[in-house]
Amino acid sequence: MPSPNALQDSYLKLPRIGKVKFRAKPKVQNNWKLKSITVSKSPTGKYHASLLYEFYVEEPHNELNIYNSIGLDYKSNGLFVDNQGNESDYPKFYRLYEQKLAFEQRKLSHMKRGSNNYYKQKLKIAKVHEKIANCRKDFLHKLSYLYAKNYDYVFVENLNMQNMKSFLHLGKSTSDNGFGMFRSMLEYKLQDRGKVFHKIDKWYASSTTCSNCGTKHKEIVNSLAVRKWVCPTCGCSHNRDVNAAVNIRQQGIKEITVGTTGLACLGLVH
Image 1 (cartoon, rainbow, N blue to C red):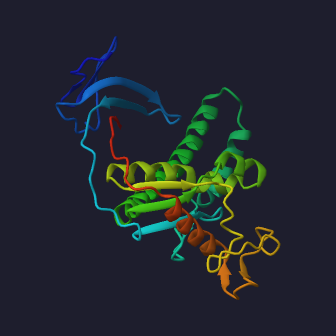
Image 2 (cartoon, rainbow, N blue to C red):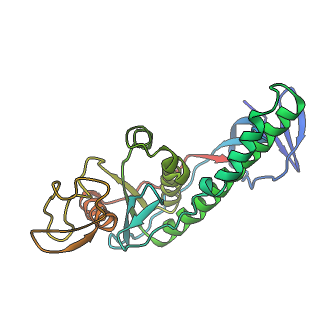
Image 3 (cartoon, helix red, strand yellow):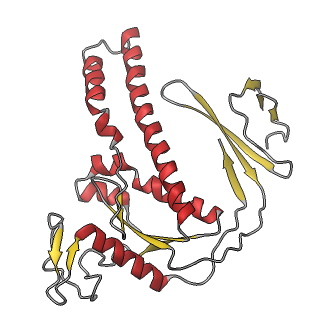
């Protein structure tokens, strides 16, 4: 158990090591109980300390409007499309830096393993990866904040992102957009505000069901290549992604129960 006085001004007091200068002191309240400190080192040589605090907060009591809700359909070459037809416009950070990354990796392949230049080049590559990761996190944090701020209910499919990478051959796109990370950010931001994040069953036929009449047309929407289709039953024209997002929202409203879970008892401070 770390000392309750581990944070002292601009220093972090660690067992056996002593005082270490802390770059950004987190805002910690007096009633927070420090549970653990985890120090990690990034591939670029930076040290990070994660402080786990236990604290209690009152459960938010908000009057939520079920119609102030949004359905999000995953999109592999972007991030998602919502039921209003808005896309996330994800910048695809990995692909932006892909040529630079390939160039630096080619240089590394021609160097003698274990030499000083070899380790210097490995550091350059690690910095490119860190840049990509930081850009992605910054974008996803800002986007999840907007949706958590503007909507009371957010509905998504409970997709297994690891399986999508393996079986649909979408590894690069799935890893680049970070949809799983986005869902996690969105979930805790909504819960902190006393709002609702709800996942519907991944086997729900959101793409093959007409959002207008509810008829399933698996024989028409039988491939990812089919982006637009017309329902033979009601004649309604659909964009595949927008139709799926509308169905996700409608199904989420059917499944949702009254009340929210807004109690948080553990907080992680970086």
